[in-house]
Length: 190
Image 1 (cartoon, rainbow, N blue to C red):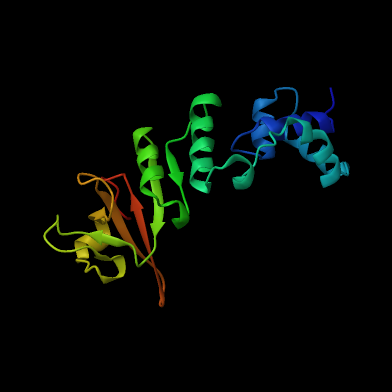
Image 2 (spheres, rainbow, N blue to C red):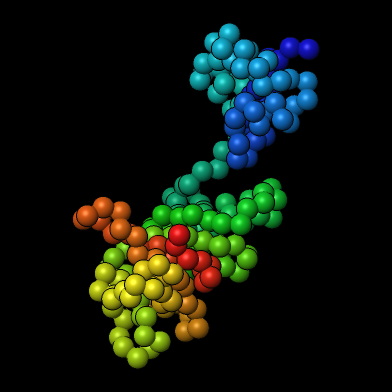
């Protein structure tokens, strides 16, 4: 039995996280990794051909705030809900951009029992004193050596009173520092 472009396109459509040839070979008993590799090297699989074959299998409801009245946060929540409950995709962690660091979305992910990691902007107001002092921008926090290694518990302004997250200060370069928040309170940096 020989492989054809339909086999490969079906694999690309059905694979959720791993698109490697070895993963394809591991899941399709009839084809070895070498067979698939030889086929792909001998065929001229253009992006147009691939699009023609997979187009009908794609869901065509993308972000459309004017048409559906939903925000980007609503769409992300819908996508995560769909991945968890409809598609039954197994995952434990959600990595997000700082734009999605909203209380509603972070709380939703937390309620689903998933762990999130999200960068917070340096001017985000937080409290690391347990309510003894006013909220202050993240960049004004002081960090002990232990907190630098293990993170620090903080409360983000306008989050529920008892909801704390762990914050990590990551030096990316001499003039750039990132602040990463997670609901995994036992997390620490290596």
